[in-house]
Amino acid sequence: MMLKSNEDLIAELKAVLAGQRYHPRTISNYCGCARRFLDYLERREIQVENVTEAQVSTYMSRARGILRKRHGRSGPHQPPIPRAGIHALLQLAQGQWPPPPKAACAAEAERFAICDEYEVWLREARGLAPASIKDLIWEARHFLTWQFERNGDNSLTSLGVDDIDRYMDMRAPKLTRKSLSAVAHRLRSLLRHLHRVGRTAIDLSPHVIGPRIYAYEGVPSTLDSGARSGCRCPEDCEKGQSPEGVEGPCDPATARDLWPEVERNLQPAA
Image (cartoon, rainbow, N blue to C red):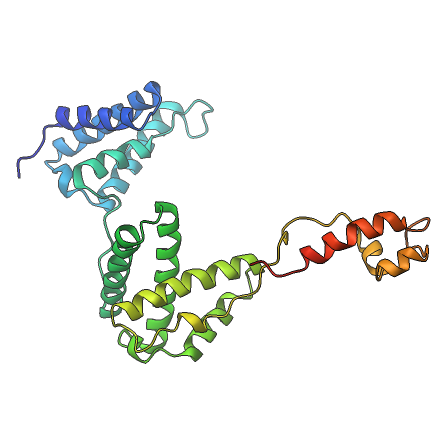
């Protein structure tokens, strides 16, 4: 493969950033930082196609040291290093940045392979948006790491309902009902894929139990806690009884109008 010159890479980077509607000043800053990084690589006879994350970290440390000497450690006008410009350059030169992690063991290799094929299925077969794919892949990595650490990299064939329940119990304590429902949705998607490609014996997705989400659950109530605890039903308001902590009796007409809406909001979401 013919290697591109530094000027060709900078010109292509500028065109890519312009196509993504970056501000001209931002494009100039990114390209200037990318050009200095290319000069650094050329002095050390390193091809940009072979750059590693460690080499980028070394360059950033050197650049920060130079800026500290020039502007002072705590100078208010010390210019930042546009790291995004270097990352955009490396993504253009290598096709992907940061580079995919290398597997340190058989379990990691299995997890990487499953997530790669899962991502392809989500993108090409289901046509999901990149943000949705990112969330689904994160959950897949998290679940597979948890499962392989407990039972080994060959444990998917014996995956059972009890494993799914333990995983959901592990995820539940720090999550809200809405967040836990999203976890259940993402886990069902992964389990359907694992069964589709033959990695699990049965389809376990129907066995993932998540919390019910009610209509308008996230909307704050217009009644305070005292009014909700004192007003037991519309009949109380019809009798003119005042909820505890609320001055004056309830308006019966208001109670009749509002109660059907309250009952609808208490129904589970479809």
